[in-house]
View 1 (tube, one colour):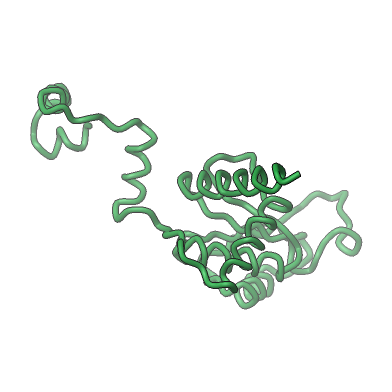
View 2 (cartoon, rainbow, N blue to C red):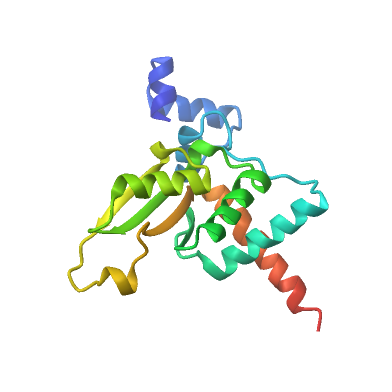
Length: 185
């Protein structure tokens, strides 16, 4: 509202008056924030028509998310693991099925303090095909941890996509899938 008022050199009250006069609906604060963060539209495009191989990837991605994904944050799609193969499969699901743009992927690594940050960033970039600039390596410094028994030398990786609409779509699709198969008895 304020941006529009500033752009037209009027007060916000004037903009509200014009909107009421012309029966224009106001966006919620969250819708305004979403549009401001994504001025070119959604940074993803879910694929509707899938080949047999893509259907397999779709179901694999949903099942991985159900089993290993974090569903507590309603704004972020997250999955963490040590096994690059699991994260690679989920990354392919995000890119190929959900159409997530590469620049919207983020990889956060928790690394034990004795291991090399650069080698870790190179490893995850190479294995997941994610540019190094999208990878953050955070050092874990809990003195109680023992690197040989608890830590991979490349850390624990967490793939993230911050998008409330895509998160809603994945959660909704997963719930529908679960309900569909649960009701077959």
